[in-house]
Length: 479
Image 1 (cartoon, rainbow, N blue to C red):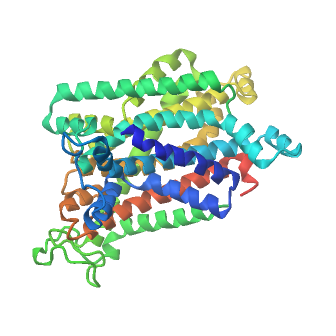
Image 2 (cartoon, rainbow, N blue to C red):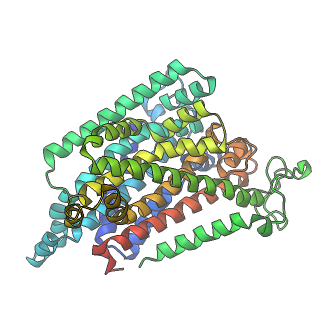
Image 3 (tube, rainbow, N blue to C red):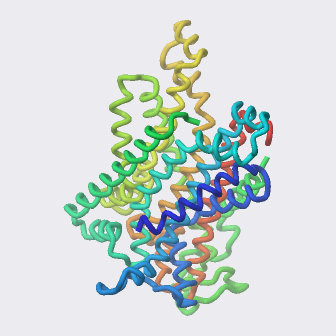
């Protein structure tokens, strides 16, 4: 399936370059918005929407499956169009974002201004001088997304009924078939490590040199509205989200029920805004726990050389497993509960924070103000808590917004797969999972909860992207 998804990477790289070159213009806003949208849409919901449009409504593509055993390659390729589109489009969003960020870093350097001053054409400056030095982080992300597609296939294969390794893992977890789980996870981890080793080898051989937007306001407004409606849900909606009205089941949107009713006659709008309490609270709790854990591990690994090796090997071991598979495995051990979802996702995202903190700490500990503090006899504890921690605020804030969005998407994915919070809790993911079988006759039971997920994750992506530009001193004057 990876072959069919490479068009997503091919689309993400040029879009990210164009977005960086024309930063602040309408085309940058369009590509950035598309990238944020792609990073905000849950894969299972996107797959269900595509299935409804192109398979059920239009009949252009197969609904699910991999074709009969005797069919040819073309027939199998047709069955893979929809799942490949889901994974390719959503993963290209990450390539666009990282390409844009890396290109912006390079385009602000002195040698780029010198190249322009010598009269070189803009195309030559961008493609030969800027892109060459911006490719290292981009190639790293390409390697990560290529490996993480294995994890994304877990949800996508379940939606489209494909007999892949992801579907095998989910079914094995639900059956408590531990030998199959161990074998599948080890296979995926080995493939993950090999793919990233190949990317590191490519960078070592061919690359030697490391390299006031409206969307932020819109994202802040949307996020603020969602938080307010979740906090004051009882005042916003007069319906009880748990009240059963079987005689009014699957009613379409109307003046009485703005977003229709579900299979038990419960008001969908009321369940969405009340479910926002659970989804947003889970995301906030995950950000808090993973931020604290990653901060401690990153500071220790970055400042103390003797602790760097053991801590980073532990972090690498955790990151070698795709996020969703590690979360599923932890949920299989801990059991279905909201607190266990928070704990599982915090353990999944802590290594990401630790990596970011360690990288920043390695740079900060060699700066003159830290060396001066050591020379004056300042204690190590004070150096870490005052001098270094204060300079980690910017990357931590940006990382927190992205992890918040990813946690909301991950919680929805776990609930959709049946290994997340208990079904009686009206989170956005459980609403889509329970309403999936009724989506053919009542599309609103899956569309509106999915839109709520997209808006929450998208607004967080907008705020995080704005923080990144605002906190970069080279871009601050241009904002």
